[in-house]
Image (cartoon, rainbow, N blue to C red; front, side, top):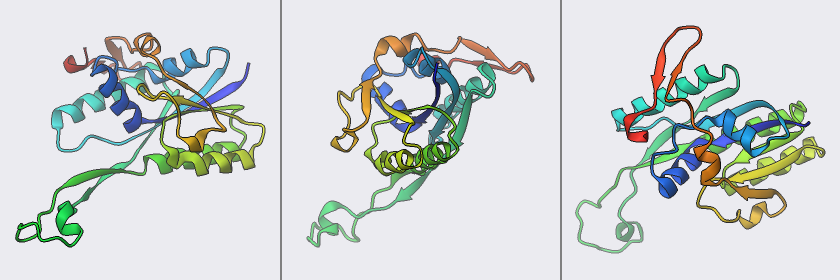
Length: 215
């Protein structure tokens, strides 16, 4: 039995589940999912890197409920690290390229760009390889920005086996990941890895319920 640490790209996984299946599989037991994907391994922890929702209080409340439920369901199994969104205000495409599109002043659009998630995953992956924290690393993401971190991790711990669990909707990884064994997470695994409808914190007694929109 090998030890495994999973590194989960929250925004990538969330977006892919929503695009493929809507909201019905979002009440996800991350530790349970990893154990289902790697049944012969012993889970050390799940490193969950995600970003809080912005400009949608109801969605943010649902996300907080999920984060609390993850912590309460398997204390210590999931370590959460939060990134943030940065607001960009790019000009319209025509203005940006120097054309006179007729908008005065040049139009700008608000766009929220997720920051730090891939950097956090890469940093933890490298740190764990340097510390020989597990024999297997399972990366739940399709983000090719993680390739340099994978390469650095291999240099630090050549014996560590690294696999890529692609979120739903990805049939194959980026060509930059070709040297990494990969597979796609299917709906069966997601359906079988849902948290209980209500999760109660064993210490505080607080109850966290599956959001109605995620039913």
